[in-house]
Length: 103
Image 1 (cartoon, rainbow, N blue to C red):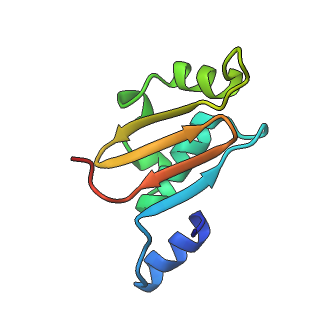
Image 2 (cartoon, one colour):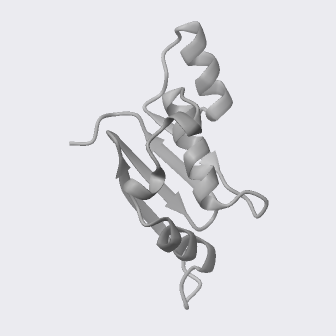
């Protein structure tokens, strides 16, 4: 699977871009920041030139859900639509951005 740098290169060179971009957040980068960066990389835009993430998802709830997990220590996945893209954020640090239009 392509990461965000591979996707940016593909978009700049006119190569085919995958239908799904994977990205990871870490303790040094908050999930909300990483989601904005992942969407920006997937759509080839600057994060500051995109609609705010809070218009599509409760960013406080997203942060809490993926960083605290569940009482049973089971993985958590939050999926939402951002513009025409499906975004999934997982408690293991994985973020996926679907590039196909959401119906």
